[in-house]
Length: 185
Picture 1 (cartoon, rainbow, N blue to C red):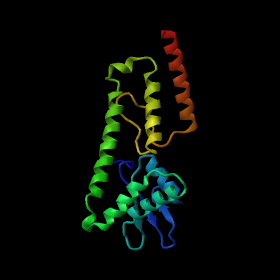
Picture 2 (picture 1 turned 90 degrees about the vertical axis):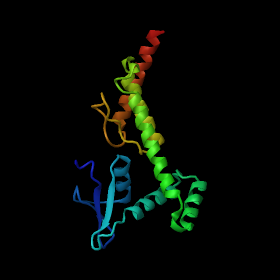
Picture 3 (picture 1 turned 120 degrees about the horizontal axis):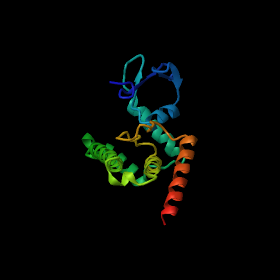
Picture 4 (picture 1 turned 135 degrees about the vertical axis):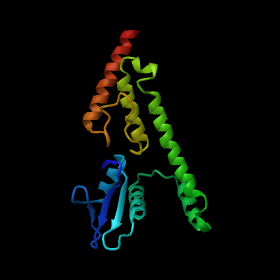
């Protein structure tokens, strides 16, 4: 199992500071959110007691993003979540949410798979630019929940958020594609 496959272990000290065990430095909640957006699973444990605090900190990250106006969860969903806590045993909400997110990831993977090199559409000039643009779009629409596709022909796929260089490259590839398409007319 590679380091990327294992959850990133974050230890919380008595001072409430969070310590990244891989890089041996302190991290913030925003750093942890960045790791997750980049496709990395995290596990946060209390150094002294060994208690798993992951759920608590993930909820805190969501709450902070919501409080800054980055409203991802509609009020109706938040109401349903609160209601699910009032039902003895938690109701069916946890299983429903897990199934929904599993289905979302599976459908995104299938969509990217359909754009693979085995697909005849892949032979169209500029296909790589379209694929890169689609990956960037999916990442933007899901707030980074998607992981970079790593199927056949994607040796250059990167894990993590797009950099300005990546976006510039996508823009350049899109311009090249538009140029080629205009020549076909």
